[in-house]
Each structure stands twice: as C-alpha cells, then as structure tokens.
Length: 317
Ligand code: CP
Image 1: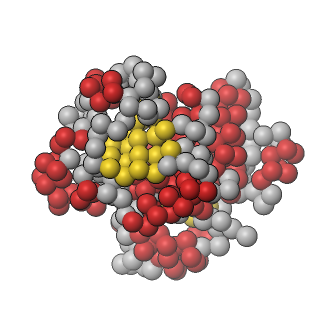
Image 2: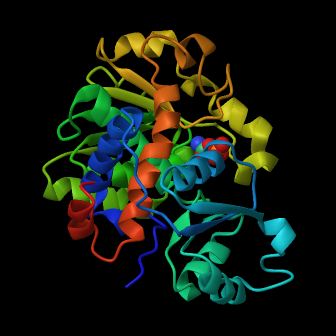
C-alpha cells in the first residue's frame, strides 16, 4: 500500500525511525560506505515555486543511493490548466516510483496524491512543510542528544506552514511547544487542537502566546519569513505587525545558555532574524539545511520499500 506524506501526521508512527536512519546514513556515507538502496528508482520533482534546498537535497539524495530524479515545473506541465492533477498522477505513476510536489494550490497536491499509485511527498504547501520539520528534528537530536522533554519555541508568523508542522512534529516526539506570535497570526485552529491532543496524551504542553518573554526555559528557538509566498500582497502590513517579533541577540540571551537557533532558510536579515543571530554561535541553520539531504534519503528508503524494517536489516541500513 503506497503512503503519501502530506502532513507530519502521515508519519506520526515513523518519525523517530526516519530521524535515526538519517543520522546513521549521514555518518556512514561520510565515512565512505556505499549504498545502492534506491538503485533503479526514479523520483519526479514538481515545483510550482522557487526552491534551492528541497530541489537539490532530493536530487542529490536520489543520486547518492543509485537512483535518479527528474526536475519539472508546474508551469511547464500546466498543472490545473493544460492538464488536471488527476491525469498527471495517473501518467507519472507509470513512469516514476515517487513524486515530490511543491504546489501553489494545496488542492492540486491533494488531488495528485489521491490519484497517484506511487507515494506523493509534500515539498511545502500553504499548510505544512513535513520534510523541513524532519530535518529540524534530526538536527535537534544531533545537537541535544534527545527530543523527548525538550522545550521548543517558534517566534513570528504562527499561521505559517513551518509553525503548523512544528506543532505536530514536536508534540509527536515528546517536546513542549510554544508559538509566540501576534494574535492576528496565531496558528490555524486545526493544528493547535491536534497538537494539544497529542501533547496531552504525552503529558507535555502546547502554548500559543503573544508574549515574547515566555522563552526563558527554551532549548530551541526557530523562526521563518514573516512574508511567505502566499502573503506577498500583505508584505507591508505583515512587516509592521511582526516587527517586534524579530529574533535578536537580546531574545537569544533570554533563553537557556545552550539554546540553538533554527531557520529553514532563505533568511531575511533585519525582518524575522538579525544577521548576528542567523550566523551566530547559537545558530545551526547550515547543519539544518544539510540534514534535509540525510533525512529525506531515510524517508525515501522508508517509502520505496514494502517492508522497511526487514529490508533495512537485510541491507544493514
Ligand atoms: N527550506 C526550504 O524549503 O528551502 P527551499 O525553499 O530553498 O527549498
């Protein structure tokens, strides 16, 4: 049965396994071990929008493990204009083994995923960015040695795809989560409710607040652009509304001394983050970007094998 990864909830059971495999692959490939786990596999990568990290990390990951990736743009394919996502799904499923899609319209992603007979991975849509959050959780585990019991704080636009996926991913892995944002930009109620349900079962907390002084006990601070693609028409208003939610060195000093700073990139200095924080001693943003590669390799291995655990053992993965 094929599995789509549109939300963190789609990998709720497998998150820790994917992260641990990503860490293992990173160490072993860097030590010179050769893997051909994706030999003969082809990944179609469709982008309606610009990308550096998502596109390159998926393509390099496929190549590293003996597979192949094809870069396509939604514009060239005419998704939803020249041809329906449904028909594209039927056809691509006969050519390739998996599809990554970064849509402008989430409905196109959902339609593609519903009709493809191969796994479809969300490469970032309006609501979520699961591949990024997997890489971030891997990075936190590398830096802190664990996830369970840590406190994670997102500062900025809370109604952002990153904030939504953090709410799910961090609670699913046993972290306490705080989103600090002006009320106008609080997360979509669906994500707040789902993450509070998950946290409640694990005896952890989810806090949504306007108060930036609530970060004293935090282990991780993350942010994202204040003006994501879907809100470009609100640029000036958002810059004003969110101007006091920039992550500065003063904010970093209020957290734990060993707090790490995360950003999925691209970063906009002087808006959501000050440049001295973005590349300062607490920042892990470049490791975070690198880990897109390793954790997505782990995700692809999981998706493209019928029985991941057995086959991982067979191949000593
Ligand atoms: N963080 C991220 O998804 O980067 P790109 O937009 O460059 O893919």
